[in-house]
Image (cartoon, rainbow, N blue to C red; front, side):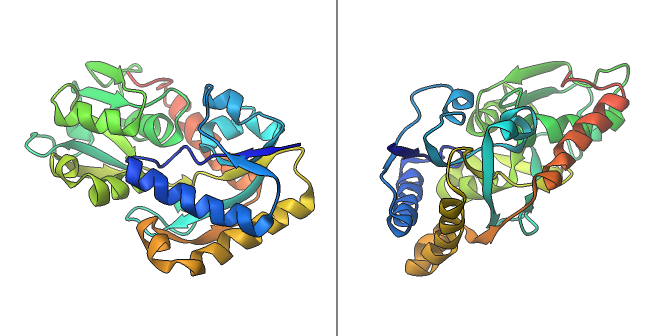
Length: 263
């Protein structure tokens, strides 16, 4: 079997994507499987379920909504980014730099943007943050799905939306790589924290290979420390799947408050 690998989650610019690809190549070189780095040519939910997937990165929300039955957790990155605490992360609540809003509570009746329905950082924790302020399941005047965190940031900057929740790691990379966009928005809060985006492998990957991958992840950070710094990688933690139950807890708390969807 020829294995495949891809890191699709934090490629916010082509230059950053090349850094991720180079780091992944070094990881695979240490493990030495027959593996190709690919660009997913299908919807990610299908890609993550490929039986020959050696390593990729997913969001915790789909992980806990069925994906965990078909994959293994390899490790969770620890990022050097505001809003991260070890292997846990939160989302930054942003509005336009010149907007009148100074807190999430002040955004009642405003327009929200979010990336995807199955995103923990862009939808689930956002819903959880809004839930205490909602009335009869409503809070915003309009909600826009943008398909990406960059799309949500651009929607806020372009005055097509007023507030969004952005994965704090993505936001840190935007500040690094796209400072002009970062200057067009400002933070007005943060969401609750949950475990970060895990690296996963197909359930068919041998246990010894999973262990070799874990060793290689940390070893490659010392090969080129300047690359690790640009990727904001501090190391990796091996979290049990039960830690990711926090994501479902946030979902359930919002639902218990009568706020089942962003609205």
